[in-house]
Length: 364
Image (cartoon, rainbow, N blue to C red; front, side, top):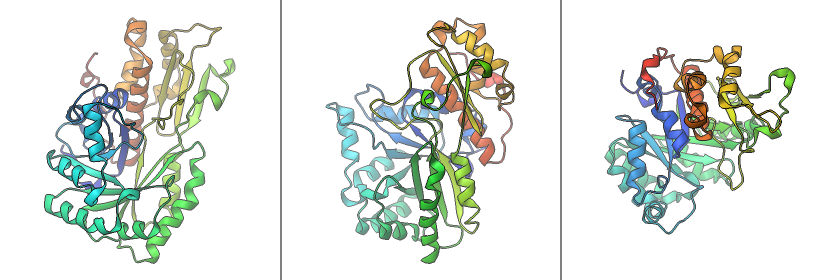
């Protein structure tokens, strides 16, 4: 199967350009990759000196398919060649001409541009370029920013199938509180006569900054913490109000918002998830459990057993069979969780692909 047409895509995952996210994407079966158009937050890859290394890593994870890049708003300026190349692309002059030129050098690269940084008089230039180069453009508006309503309506009203708009609600464990603001934005589009079936992508995440601040790990529940995934519920609530608009789902794939001191205490931990909940098991100072111990507990959990087959599930299932101290890590734990999230959301939002064969998962 080839990648689904853009207009038929029902899931738009957003991923940071980090090792865990790229591993999770790379380990999706080909049939699952065909159902998505991921947006990758572009930044220099690890310690590389050339920004092209970032594109090489994206293409390795998602070969021969179209994807979007969005400039990583969290990336800090560094005195390296790759960082200087990245900063040059961040120049919004003439409707991000440098970024558009960069995209032209990569056939499968589409653009996701932050609407806050586009000048109103540059919108037409970007549209003209998209038509000339047959490049899709998504213009994203983040709720955390001050949204220029006139610009938002101007972009959403563009009658060009290559142009789409996204509303990014960001991260919040109380993500459902964003419903009113999102509904208000879309209702405004209706009032100005938005063309029928206009595609609007809704991006959100309820992934917690720290699991250990949300609940206690109790012995009576098997030292398992359960956290609901609320972003798809938010999407469904908004969708029921606008059946005449092609509202489609996107999320941040079980990744945290980058912050200087984000994340919980670094400890031995195994996370897993389905389309509705995140589950986390961890070791404590007074109970020195290994990755193998935690994996055995996960394997006995009916929720884990019922999860869709995936590389992440396969990897956790095999921890007791290997030397876990050297083959599993916090980075691999994140990759497994993100991979399981992708599989569950692809199946939830799209026509269900065939279950993957475990032979598709290479040992690493």
